[in-house]
Image 1 (cartoon, rainbow, N blue to C red):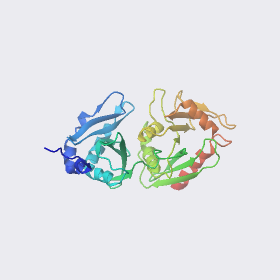
Image 2: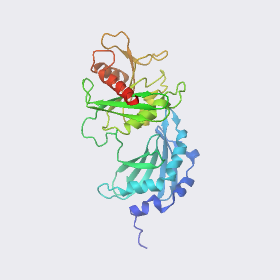
Image 3: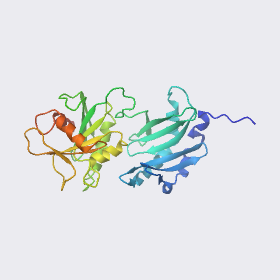
Image 4: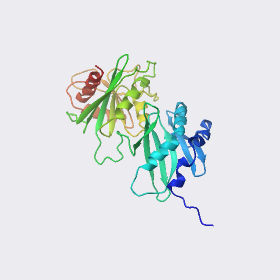
Amino acid sequence: MPRRRIDNAALRLGNKPAAFYLERFDEHALKVVGESREACTRVGEGPFEFDLCVPVEFGAVRIDLIPTASAVLSQIVDMDDAARAVPRGQQDIEELAAVVVREFFVELIYWSTTQNADRREYFTRDDDGRWRLRGLELPWMTWVYKQKAPIMTLDVAYDIASAAAAGVYFSDWDTATADGAFSTRVESEPHAYEPGEFYKRELPVLMNLLDQSPVPVSALIIDGYVWLSADSRPGLGARLYEALARHVPVIGVAKTKFHEDTWSQPIRRGASEAPLHVTAAGMDRTDAARRIERMSGDGRIPVLLKQADGLARKALA
């Protein structure tokens, strides 16, 4: 009997309805293997089987993303069709190996059965709940960037009914002039303040801004703390680092000392006796502090950090 020919058409998830995958998703089977940063379970059967994963952040599985995972599976056939429809050079025979569900985007990872390689296709969710194909990278990613990616400082401003964020990007730490700047405004009520959960208010606004970034980034600087304790309690900066799947280092520059702070690196700039408090994720804290010290400006606050603050306030006004 001749061997059945396997091609991309035979491996399309659309050979089964979306309900086939959703019905076979067992959230209780999510498992962390070794030092993995993800918890995964198998979904589907036979040639239509793949890993579905959610992140492990700060020692805990993001079980809050299980509803998002279910929403992805309800659309997985359309997502797979969209990813396969885009020509990517040589036409390999590819099977879907894994779907990684993150808070702000989803990765579909395809494994080539003819070459020892994989590719990732990224999706983000539109306001109507549909997952939209974004291609091989998101705007802030540096995968295909041929030069040194810019550094970017971020800031957020908000009032009762809306929020705005701004990004200022530049080529080197001691430059005095930005290469460019941009801002966004979100016309919705910011998340209510929760003690110790401040990131819930600012993180979505920052991710919305980065999703529209005109350049990829090599490092991000925020106004505030990355870590809120000596034992690595996550602050806004750490949450942003995880939201970006740990691809981009995040530096926090706080103007006001957090309660009983002993873990930040204090630096003094200009003639001011009041220190700035530097924390970092994805980069050594001391190295991060040296870079902030190098930044242009005679005053306590580097010029380009001030520019991001002013631009965010202007976008909100």
